[in-house]
Image (cartoon, rainbow, N blue to C red; front, side):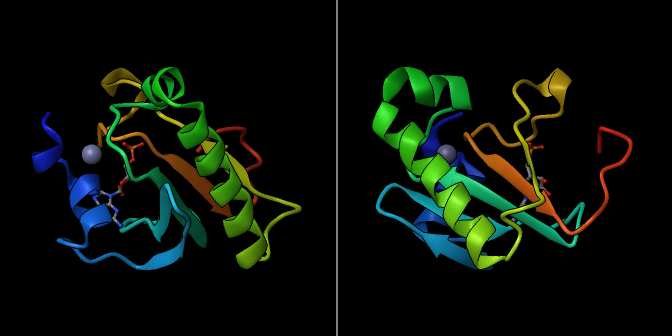
Length: 115
Ligand code: 5GP
Ligand code: ZN
């Protein structure tokens, strides 16, 4: 998919509205439109890569920045002590948006070990 047609690129650019929680130089964080937990934030590098491995391969700075923003969002949401990070890579694993992102989930008891 070209970045022009990518939903998360359009959210990064502000063409599509989102409920933003935080932003850094290289990443943004906004609430998932269909939350799976009371806190469900997507942390997204601004630069388009199709998944987290591709991001890691192309820029360790972008990779470090996205994880720094995850930590900041956990602090802002008051869930530093109890949260779950989730990364879906590939359609068969549940990835639906092919722009790298990390799900930060909290506020629920994840007792079954999976969503
Ligand atoms: P994936 O399944 O690719 O790991 O995660 C994509 C996530 O993006 C899903 O949890 C889905 O609810 C969320 N999502 C899809 N479209 C939108 C949108 O337009 N705005 C926001 N905020 N989240 C979206
Ligand atoms: Zn994109």
